[in-house]
Image (cartoon, rainbow over all chains, first blue to last red; front, side):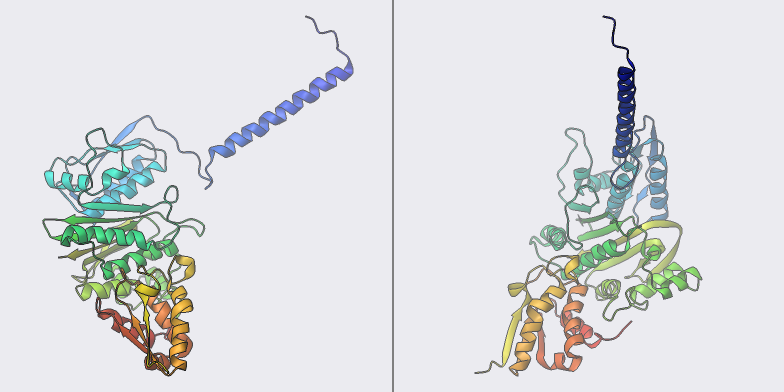
Amino acid sequence: MKKLIVGEKWKRYLASRSRHELRAKTRFTDYRRRKAKSHLGHARPKHFKKDGIVSGPRVFSIIHNPIGMIDFFDQMEHMAKRRNVIVNLSNVESMTPDAIAGLLAAIHRCKSTGAHVKGNVPRSAAPKKMLNESGFRNYVHSRVGAREHAEMGRIARFTRSSEAFNNRFDQFLATDLIQFANQRLRGQALPHQPSYSVFSEAMLNTWNHASRSEDSREPWWASVYVDEDRHCACFTFLDRGVGIFGSHNLTLKLSLLSNLRVLNSAQLLKQIFKGEIPSTTREAGRGNGIPGMYAHCRAGRIKNLTIISNHANGNAESETYVVLPKEFVGTLLYWEIGL
Amino acid sequence: MIASRLDLSIAKEFTEFPGPRKRTEGEFSGEQFLAELLRPRFVAARDAGASLFVELDGAAGYPTSFLEEAFGGLAREFGVEEVRRVLEIHCADEPYLVDQIWKYVDEATTRK
């Protein structure tokens, strides 16, 4: 039916309603745009349609093959900027548990860009067994029948998004990992004071110093794997934060020595181990964390203590300190306890 | 009658899972232990002319920052000599912890 009312008043009303609708539509568009961004201000991740393959090094171990693993992680993260990532581990011949925590951290970083990550297992029996029994599969989707019980390992993590650890140092989680190791090694869920102490310092250092900004906290992974062949439990604590030498809380002395290249990062790590670099807070009684770990290792209470951070790679047991040609972004802490 | 020795078992009276340095960093911190148990018991022992026997056994472990904040903090408040005179520390599980604590007491006021 033809509209009969065409007076000025009606025209103004229609124009007003049209403007109102336009404003409402604009507001809604803005709202959708804001909602598309997360609370951290990052754009909603893209979803890629193409896949890219990244192959793991034959020696899949950060402590034994740091350069190969740094390249591997870099390739994964580079690929994840434009494609989904397929991790090919079929050619891996040897593996250590620290690399599994590193792989989970790399997967976490890749997923944050929106890339899907999938992969296969090593063809060799030993690394395949380690991967399947480490607890790795608790953090990835596995096809029906492929999920195996984590017989020999446990992996725990703290991430910004999903986990509910309110404490900077989660003593119950540390105890759980240590008791698991002792249950497998000695048949009793006993405590292990040095490992408890190392976990506490690692968690607190990551919380206080590893983050790139003051208002966010860096995710970390903590793991234990019981190596039956070597009769030892291997502990790993890993974060992909700024690293020891990238912390904004560096002391003036450490900053100067590092920036002026008076000492290289390996020499600085050696000094940190030995307590010769002052605490970042400059308060009395501080700065005992890493020197305490070093003391545990030198006294034989823990074995093979290794720290890899930025360009430094140090082993407190063998007293070897090496400068890495490529940077490991973050900090890896690895140690073992024997029977 | 004045007791010649007061006892304090960390595992039995405070926690089996000692935590970080400060209260803001998590549960069962060294700061909390110092405020709620160690300092009052230390003062009581000192005023009674007794010693304070601190038992470390039975806990899952001790973070270095927990021990430093508690025992180093005590020394910063009451002085190294006073703490050395009143305090006795025992740990059969991990005997090296006793030396570690005395080191924190001795270095309590030293800036590194």
